[in-house]
Length: 143
Image (cartoon, rainbow, N blue to C red):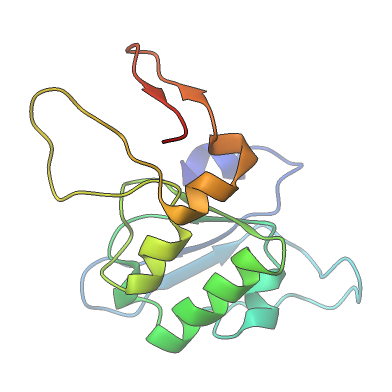
Protein backbone atom coordinates (compact mmCIF):
# COMPACT_ATOMS: atom_id res chain seq x y z
CA UNK A 1 0.00 0.00 0.00
CA UNK A 2 2.83 2.38 0.91
CA UNK A 3 4.54 1.80 -2.43
CA UNK A 4 1.32 2.47 -4.34
CA UNK A 5 0.52 5.67 -2.44
CA UNK A 6 4.07 7.01 -2.63
CA UNK A 7 3.95 6.66 -6.42
CA UNK A 8 1.23 9.32 -6.64
CA UNK A 9 2.89 12.77 -6.82
CA UNK A 10 -0.26 14.46 -5.46
CA UNK A 11 -0.07 12.52 -2.18
CA UNK A 12 2.28 13.65 0.57
CA UNK A 13 2.92 10.38 2.37
CA UNK A 14 4.53 9.95 5.77
CA UNK A 15 4.94 6.34 6.83
CA UNK A 16 6.03 4.68 10.05
CA UNK A 17 7.03 1.06 9.69
CA UNK A 18 7.97 -1.18 12.59
CA UNK A 19 9.85 -4.35 11.80
CA UNK A 20 10.24 -6.36 14.97
CA UNK A 21 11.49 -4.84 18.20
CA UNK A 22 13.79 -2.23 16.67
CA UNK A 23 13.21 1.47 16.27
CA UNK A 24 10.47 2.30 13.73
CA UNK A 25 11.50 3.42 10.24
CA UNK A 26 10.05 6.80 9.22
CA UNK A 27 9.88 8.11 5.66
CA UNK A 28 8.07 11.00 4.01
CA UNK A 29 7.45 12.43 0.56
CA UNK A 30 6.22 15.72 2.06
CA UNK A 31 8.57 18.61 1.41
CA UNK A 32 7.19 21.30 3.73
CA UNK A 33 4.21 22.23 5.87
CA UNK A 34 1.77 24.02 3.52
CA UNK A 35 0.83 26.66 6.12
CA UNK A 36 4.28 27.58 7.44
CA UNK A 37 6.47 26.26 4.59
CA UNK A 38 8.71 24.73 7.28
CA UNK A 39 9.98 21.18 6.85
CA UNK A 40 7.69 18.70 8.58
CA UNK A 41 9.54 17.03 11.46
CA UNK A 42 10.07 13.36 10.75
CA UNK A 43 9.04 11.76 14.04
CA UNK A 44 6.31 9.52 15.42
CA UNK A 45 3.29 11.74 16.23
CA UNK A 46 2.71 12.06 19.97
CA UNK A 47 -0.01 14.66 20.46
CA UNK A 48 -3.27 15.80 18.94
CA UNK A 49 -1.72 18.69 16.97
CA UNK A 50 0.80 16.35 15.36
CA UNK A 51 -1.94 13.89 14.36
CA UNK A 52 -4.17 16.66 12.98
CA UNK A 53 -1.53 17.37 10.32
CA UNK A 54 -2.66 14.14 8.66
CA UNK A 55 -6.09 14.19 6.96
CA UNK A 56 -5.90 10.40 6.54
CA UNK A 57 -4.29 7.93 8.95
CA UNK A 58 -3.92 4.33 7.74
CA UNK A 59 -3.13 1.82 10.46
CA UNK A 60 -1.72 -1.67 10.11
CA UNK A 61 -1.36 -4.19 12.95
CA UNK A 62 0.36 -3.93 16.34
CA UNK A 63 0.18 -0.14 16.35
CA UNK A 64 0.41 -0.11 20.14
CA UNK A 65 4.03 -1.29 19.75
CA UNK A 66 4.85 2.00 17.99
CA UNK A 67 2.43 4.46 19.62
CA UNK A 68 2.15 5.03 23.36
CA UNK A 69 -1.25 4.97 25.07
CA UNK A 70 -1.09 8.78 25.24
CA UNK A 71 -0.37 9.01 21.51
CA UNK A 72 -3.26 6.65 20.71
CA UNK A 73 -5.55 8.85 22.84
CA UNK A 74 -4.32 11.95 20.98
CA UNK A 75 -4.95 10.22 17.63
CA UNK A 76 -8.45 9.30 18.81
CA UNK A 77 -9.21 12.96 19.58
CA UNK A 78 -7.77 14.08 16.23
CA UNK A 79 -10.05 11.60 14.46
CA UNK A 80 -13.23 12.09 16.49
CA UNK A 81 -13.01 15.87 16.89
CA UNK A 82 -10.39 17.15 14.50
CA UNK A 83 -11.51 15.93 11.11
CA UNK A 84 -8.81 13.32 10.50
CA UNK A 85 -9.99 10.01 9.07
CA UNK A 86 -8.62 6.64 10.18
CA UNK A 87 -8.54 3.43 8.13
CA UNK A 88 -7.83 0.04 9.69
CA UNK A 89 -6.05 -1.54 6.72
CA UNK A 90 -5.28 -4.94 8.24
CA UNK A 91 -7.97 -5.51 10.84
CA UNK A 92 -7.90 -4.32 14.42
CA UNK A 93 -4.67 -2.32 14.82
CA UNK A 94 -3.95 -3.20 18.45
CA UNK A 95 -5.30 -4.00 21.88
CA UNK A 96 -5.96 -0.47 23.14
CA UNK A 97 -9.68 0.04 23.96
CA UNK A 98 -9.66 3.30 21.98
CA UNK A 99 -9.33 1.27 18.77
CA UNK A 100 -12.75 -0.24 19.58
CA UNK A 101 -14.23 3.26 19.85
CA UNK A 102 -12.66 4.40 16.56
CA UNK A 103 -13.59 1.28 14.64
CA UNK A 104 -16.60 1.40 12.29
CA UNK A 105 -17.16 -2.33 12.89
CA UNK A 106 -16.69 -4.74 15.78
CA UNK A 107 -13.60 -6.93 15.26
CA UNK A 108 -13.46 -10.52 16.41
CA UNK A 109 -10.33 -12.64 16.75
CA UNK A 110 -11.46 -15.06 14.04
CA UNK A 111 -14.46 -15.97 11.93
CA UNK A 112 -15.66 -19.22 10.45
CA UNK A 113 -18.70 -20.04 8.41
CA UNK A 114 -21.26 -17.37 7.60
CA UNK A 115 -19.98 -13.91 8.48
CA UNK A 116 -22.16 -11.31 10.16
CA UNK A 117 -20.89 -7.76 10.47
CA UNK A 118 -22.01 -5.55 13.33
CA UNK A 119 -21.43 -1.82 13.33
CA UNK A 120 -19.84 -0.22 16.38
CA UNK A 121 -21.13 3.00 17.95
CA UNK A 122 -18.75 4.99 15.73
CA UNK A 123 -19.93 3.10 12.64
CA UNK A 124 -23.57 3.81 13.47
CA UNK A 125 -22.86 7.55 13.49
CA UNK A 126 -20.74 7.59 10.32
CA UNK A 127 -22.92 8.16 7.25
CA UNK A 128 -20.41 6.47 4.95
CA UNK A 129 -20.87 3.18 6.85
CA UNK A 130 -24.67 3.25 7.28
CA UNK A 131 -25.37 1.07 4.27
CA UNK A 132 -22.46 -0.75 2.68
CA UNK A 133 -22.62 -3.64 0.26
CA UNK A 134 -19.79 -6.12 -0.05
CA UNK A 135 -18.83 -7.85 -3.29
CA UNK A 136 -19.64 -11.25 -1.84
CA UNK A 137 -23.26 -10.22 -1.34
CA UNK A 138 -23.01 -9.37 2.36
CA UNK A 139 -24.45 -6.11 3.53
CA UNK A 140 -23.97 -3.93 6.55
CA UNK A 141 -27.13 -2.16 7.64
CA UNK A 142 -28.34 -0.27 10.64
CA UNK A 143 -29.58 -2.58 13.42
